Figure 1 (spheres, rainbow over the protein chains, first blue to last red):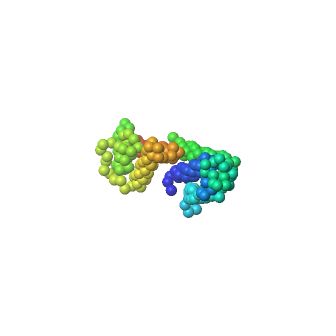
Figure 2 (figure 1 turned 60 degrees about the vertical axis):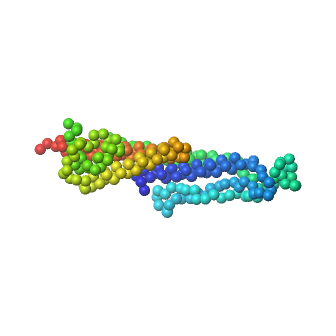
Figure 3 (figure 1 turned 60 degrees about the horizontal axis):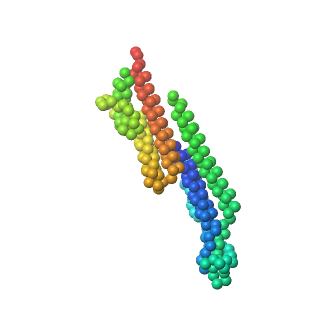
Length: 133
Length: 112
């Protein structure tokens, strides 16, 4: 544990929330994918986040895994689509767009909260250093 | 008058203070001729050496992060975090150095 370990802890939180934002960005970007029914649909990504380390004070957070949504997707009748099968069906992913928007706000706010922790800690350390003068 | 006591403090913390002059940019922390009295084995010298070593590590980490970000591989947030950490560590080391020099000057100014 280093002297200013809060920077590492909150930095790991910022990394985790940035990864969450990346996952949300991928889901939103793929919301209108379409594919042939012979292939799985885009599976929406959601992260598994847990404590890093062994339960001591000063452990950060880390992304330990990714869970994938339904590969089944939903079938739509689009006979004009070049990917459509003989029945005119294509496969679309199931991405909960409003839910992704809410998660994006959460990830953004939590990222900012970690930044606030770092800012406050820096001010606290600086005022402690000011004791000597 | 300030040069003489600052150079004489090298007798107590010569390894640490030499490193300080080269890494932290602490100018004139050591004179050219450090006295060979106490050596580097006192506890304050160990403390100062450890502080300089950890300052060196933090600054190296900050440099590495800055290089990564400049080459497009790093994370800007990590750069700012490690730069803040390096800045605080430098301030802490310099504050302790100032305190030590201040204490030494007070002892040197003692009148009997």
